[in-house]
Image 1 (cartoon, rainbow, N blue to C red):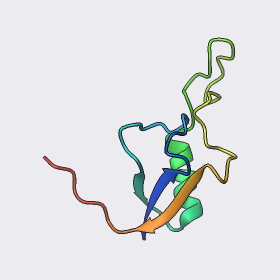
Image 2 (image 1 turned 90 degrees about the horizontal axis):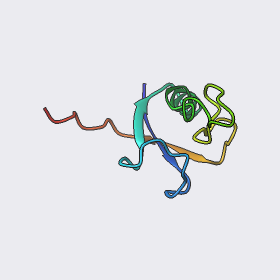
Image 3 (image 1 turned 45 degrees about the horizontal axis):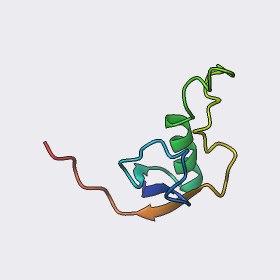
Image 4 (image 1 turned 180 degrees about the vertical axis):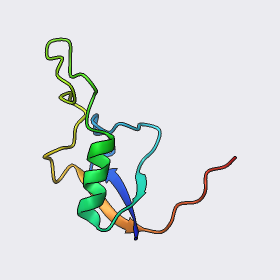
Length: 82
């Protein structure tokens, strides 16, 4: 299975859940699966807002925004340092 880099189209997008990482690299069968895996792992702010406390309904979601993320095939990421 190939590796895919998932990153926001706009590096300043406030929905990006990992401000200290410009992209997430994961293994998937294809770009659509990589996008779906990312969306499951980072669905949104967990409980929306105080005005709308609905699970997975916060403004941090890329779900349904096909243009918000860029998914590109990449090489295997380096092992994390011990």
